[in-house]
Length: 122
Length: 122
Image 1 (cartoon, chains in turn cyan, brown):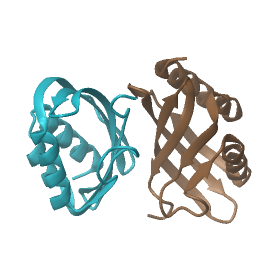
Image 2 (cartoon, each protein chain N blue to C red):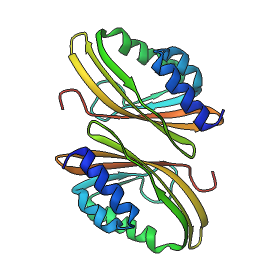
Image 3 (tube, each protein chain N blue to C red):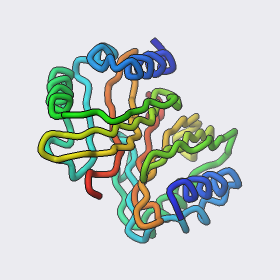
Image 4 (cartoon, each protein chain N blue to C red):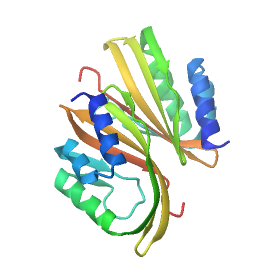
């Protein structure tokens, strides 16, 4: 798949809430980079660890208030997707996250995803 | 200025080629993050060092073939601008760079810029 095709597929799956299926677009050795200052590891290596991190995140949500997935912007082997997620988390409370997700594609798979957002309470 | 206003101003100045004026939107302690694998420092701290790096980059260009600055995508305190620059550099040759630039705004100034692109020859 081209970068455009992967971007379109990722956005379509995220819009349908099919996040676990979206990880099928990732390489086995993919890397996730979170914002400095967030609890936990800033960098996660490997698809299995990424999926585990996603499940922990999803399981800590007690209520989803709203969310959005915008149109992807493609440049070369990278694309950017604006996303938002207003949710309440167990223990830490409500977080209305507005996020830019930047994905790097290599050999037809997502190799790296870097996330940019305001820290909760910032 | 809001994140939207800074994004619009940055894009307008870059479209006019007024890059040095665009650095007026930066905080004095701003940070630039380049791609891993690029020659030189991956992270540059401080506006003076960022401007010096820009001048070195601009001075090494022998011919600009084309370039583009796209519409900004804003989410919270971050925005992303797609840019391209097809230019020939002294010594290293022609590089048709397609880039996503992600900016973080704090206190009405650009605090951090992270650049995503394919490495030359990749």
